[in-house]
Image 1 (tube, helix red, strand yellow):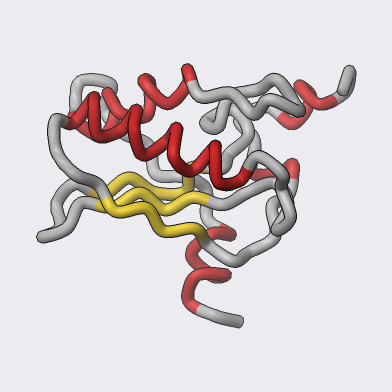
Image 2 (image 1 turned 90 degrees about the vertical axis):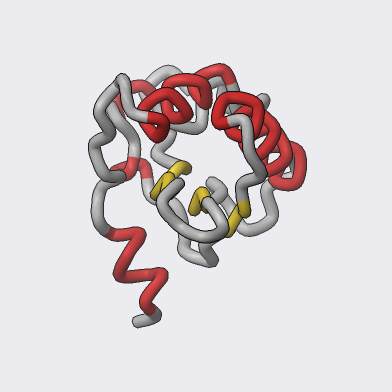
Length: 112
């Protein structure tokens, strides 16, 4: 099991709503998966926001490795995060498979 696999099995860290990471997390609620209609935070695609690095970084995953909107979602997350943070942010897409258990509320998929 790779380090990224182990890392993604853990829930996304909780961020204080007033922290820069918390503000980015809330701003990312505006980025919705066009096929599912839920945002990237609700879906649990955002695995980590770390602004305390020499190169600030967001780690995320996609719902499927062949997501037709993957490139678009990654760019939307990057643009939204950079606009909110006021600085460049590196995007890392984890190779792990997404699971509905990563969601804030897996019951949201019931009607999908």
